[in-house]
Amino acid sequence: MDFNVRKLATDAGIFFSRAVQFTEEKLGQAEKTELDAHFENLLSRADCTKNWTEKIYRQTEVLLQPNPGARIEEFLYEKLDRKVPPRPTNGEILGQFMLEAAKEFGPGTPYGSTLIKVGDCQRRLGGAEREFLQSSSISFLTPLRNFLEGDWRTISKERRLLENRRLDLDACKARLKKAKAAEAKAAAVPDFQETRPRNYVLSASASAAEHELRVAQTEFDRQAEVTRLLLEGISSTHVNHLRCLCEFVEAQAMYYNQCHKYMQELQKELGSSSGDIRCPDSLEVNSQPDVSPTNPSAYLPLNSPSTLETDALQIEEVQPPASGTRKAKVLYDYDAGDSSELSLRADELITVYTVPGMDSDWLIGERGNLKGKVPVTYLELLS
Image 1 (cartoon, rainbow, N blue to C red):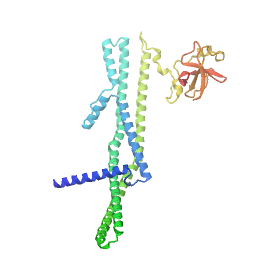
Image 2: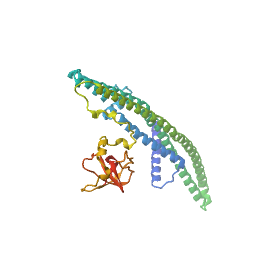
Image 3: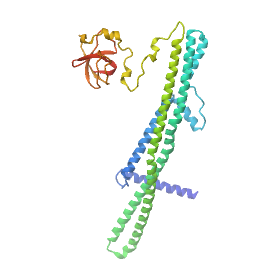
Image 4: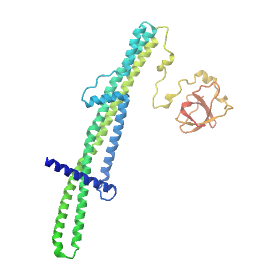
């Protein structure tokens, strides 16, 4: 018990002295051993990696499981080292409700038969979602969490140890500096009879301080090398996270591809079903050409002017209305689809106005002597 008390008192004294030294360094009252530029860059890169990995991990959790209550439940099961019970997805629950409703309404009725088809599709969509969640959790979330809870904790521990070694080294430097100053001051005293014993003690104190400094420097260098190797391993972490990110994208693409396939099959079933009630034509999304999310032209108004409207609207004969015109800024590049449209370039200013009978998703645009129809979604109206 006596040994533990002494150790506790010693540790408390070391902690207090380091706290005082750290405060003096912040106030500029004590010297500080600076790390080299390369080491500082490694530290900054590691901190950046940790911060963004944590943000990406948290937001991916929200994406995969928007329900905070469910996330807390999964967290508790994980901490208790217990398996999370299977939970049906919202799509599976909706599909089950539709199937049960179809039994009540009668599977032979148009509404009941349609509920069966849509409900079965929703269950398949929910199953695909569950597989995507499981795959993403294993291939993407788990490696990120392993880094934050494993590698990063090791790096943080070694960094704290390096900081303690640095503080010890700076303390040894300060003690040696004081011993050298006291020895020089004593050597300048003219009374040799009184100062010889004192000089001997001061010289021994300076020698001990030099020995402590060499030991502290060795420990600091050793710890700096260990920390440097761990920080340089961040590059391997980036490579691993890159591979996991690609797997996450593949899983996401497969999931959306499955969903699209199921919806296509459902549309075919609904379109080929015979009955008095048919789904509206507006649900036939597959009639639209394939588009790319990165192509702004993919978001042209669905009710684009038909060929008949184009023929009826002669651009050369269109005149600005009496109510006036407006200025607009072009947001994206746009290539005219035919001679009645006006090509646009991002960030340019044009004059726009509408004419009676024209589709609300299009305007007449003028730039110099050029005139033509332009999509409203590509413009920011200024006045």
